[in-house]
Amino acid sequence: MSLQPTLAVVEATRFRSHDPAYHDYVQLLVGNVIAEARSHGWAVDRVAADQGTDGLLAATASADAIVIVGGEDIHPGFYGGETGYPNESRHLPVADAAQIALVRSALERRTPLLGICRGLQIVNVALGGTLVQDLGDECGHVNRGVPIPQVLTTHTVHLQPDSRLADLLGESPVDVRSAHHQAAGDLGAGLVVTARSHDGHVEAIEHRDAPLLAVQWHPEDVAAPAGQLTALLGVLEARVAVAA
Image (cartoon, rainbow, N blue to C red; front, side):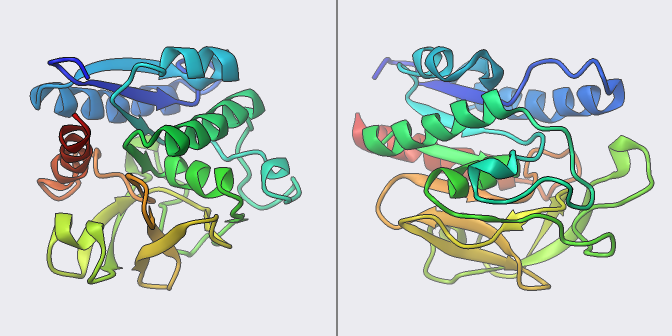
């Protein structure tokens, strides 16, 4: 490991010219992750997955840790589902395949990995899990019919007491900021649920023995409770330090 650890921040795609408002808000969220990581001594590489599997794996091969951030719905073909479900977004199957391969590679190499929102779903699907395709318009996990900067909503999650997540975030329940209409369904191999929302849906997962943790919410949102993103990035830093 280098003296300054390298964090790969991986997004599905770098540009969303079809939807400028969504593009701008994603830039804000990803920028918050990058700024927080740099403030804690990480050298950050920002990498887009839509370059394809070979390119993504090459671009992240030397990373000491990885964050997979939010984005579009995963194509249902990767988890045995069908298209045509309510509130379906566009799909980026090249990026999906590349991020799935990245999760599997990180697991094999024991590279610490944090998934955020779509990142949680990528982790679950990569390890053989499925997704609940739509939680409904009144689910309380996303605001509908509002400008993009207002789609995130605040709700509580209940943490599993004996989890790494509970060690990081403290007493349960905790408030989180969310904007998702999908959730993990059947769990992938080696994963355990470490947080659930008020309606019982999965809000966080961890791997039983690998340095892999993912949350369905957005700790990087400007309105997220103070310290959440710092704590989650901190677990990557701790894992990298142990491996050094």
